[in-house]
Length: 608
Image 1 (cartoon, helix red, strand yellow):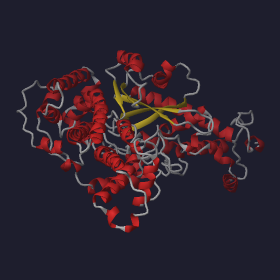
Image 2 (tube, helix red, strand yellow):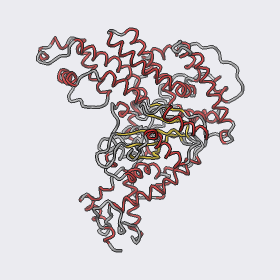
Image 3 (tube, helix red, strand yellow):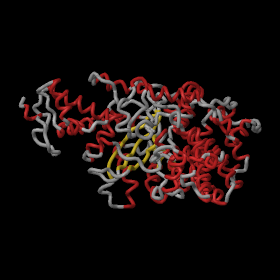
Image 4 (cartoon, one colour):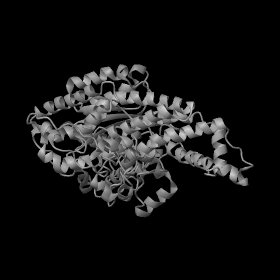
């Protein structure tokens, strides 16, 4: 072998010498293993140009001298092979998928805005999965009417999953509406079932918080920082601002600023500014109280959003009616208006998921509607039940749905067996926001890295994921490490049941509904006639359907799996509190678009 074929190169262009042709078998295997390591760990191939890396590889094998183009070519080859396996898996999958759209801020080197299209689903082991199907920049997309649809269409056509999509998870931006996506949605529905347009809950909270936060000037925040001595607070996460500003309000209420002479030399907020600070603390504190239950402690599946968001609605209405100042009431009214728009858009999917939680069934929905919080509350409850019945009928008509969901041999370990490179599968972790298949309260939405990557894979929990965070950034393809998940579970057990403080929920526990009607003998009717389960804050709906519901209700369990797999937020954990779009992972910003896409997508597919 001519070692010059593997000599370090400075060009990003593919050359004849940057080919695996003619390279000895052992070196081919080494290049393949190194490329897979970089894909799994989210490591930029340009790393091999670092002198320290070069010295390391030469110590191991003086004759092994890979080039960046050679590695990039191997990454593209791995992507091609893995994509075909992923395509076959999704085509054969008997469940439904949600496709999410997420864009990040401009990359500093080669790219403009990044767009990430991700498939979310619950597999036959009842594990929450999150696979990136496309990762690219918006450069070259000229037609504005196709800008938001382009990524979805490429993913659907490229993986031939037109009949698999049950929902599109979208940002809360004006461009993502029925007018823009209606045609694409209709095309999917012609080949499959109804397709929900689902809007990100974390985005809703961000927009509601931003509407109040923008009234707090930079000078006011700096004065408060010095006054309260909370240290530097340049975070873009609004939960930290809630804590700091509430601390300032508490000190003011205790008259600490006038009791101690040490504060005499500091600039203090005016009465008008204190009203703004107290308004922020009060209203955003309401949002935070609900956000903690949704985003902290793991990934939350769709069944828990209805009752928690209903609680937020009650809290905001209370502030509209009884706020201490005109400014507070005005902002509460604005927040409630934005919330109500979201609530109306999401009512059907959230309520349907709630009914498939055995702690609620129709009971909570009937209770909510009995409060006359909606003008047509009764008809809304009937609409949800009617939709669920029609959905059940469609599933019951399918032969495959008559059989219980049976776990399949874990595909995640196959790749390890086939490619034993002496290391752990570095990409197994969360759920984001990526694991937490936990739905009720938590998931493995990859919150330690990306958003929420939520692959709730037990394997991932066992192996951990040292590559979950790169430079402290969240990545699009991480799973919760064993240590993170263990800590999250510990926190969930130790955390008090916040529902004890939720007024509406406590009222629900005392609610006496009418005795169940006699229905037919369908699984849905039998499920609804059974008493609701006793309240348990640590309950996980996916676990229940896997271990109990699936055997009693084989058809309904498939309905439940597909509905509960719909993510209501693209980000979880720390990243759900962001006040701006996330930056792309550090390792992709200097890569060519094709290589960046290959690395971002292939990490999960390597397990197939």
